[in-house]
Length: 182
Image (cartoon, rainbow, N blue to C red; front, side, top):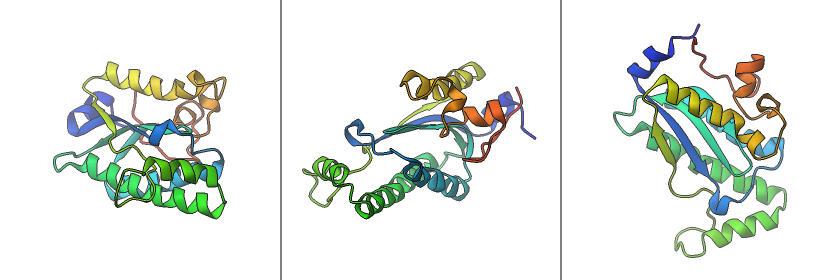
């Protein structure tokens, strides 16, 4: 059973997180591409004891609404590990499927980096601390409406890679999220 949101916001730090593929390139094109993010998000949320309240996985970026103990910089460590391992898996998949156009774009992005052959993710990620219920729901709605705004689907719950399905349909088949009471 979920806990009331106002209590959750007091316990640990809740963040709205965004991370993007280099040059805003759309590398996620099919279900097996998205599975790289899904599988690793499930793994790293357990490793870092992250509560996941909302997510959307888009062709060139993702948004998360997460909560964790950030007293030792856990959000940065979570993002670093997640992005490092997903980059490795993305490259393995691209090479395995001979997707040379995508590989070339990721090679070009690393052109000026002496110790890197490819660059998948932008170096930094954006995060905003959620300080109120109003802000929480504004970000959750933003996450859920992102695929509609980009013209990928008609309704938020139609996008398979979004927590909108968890909330509207009770569908936890892609990623189980942490539910709270309204």
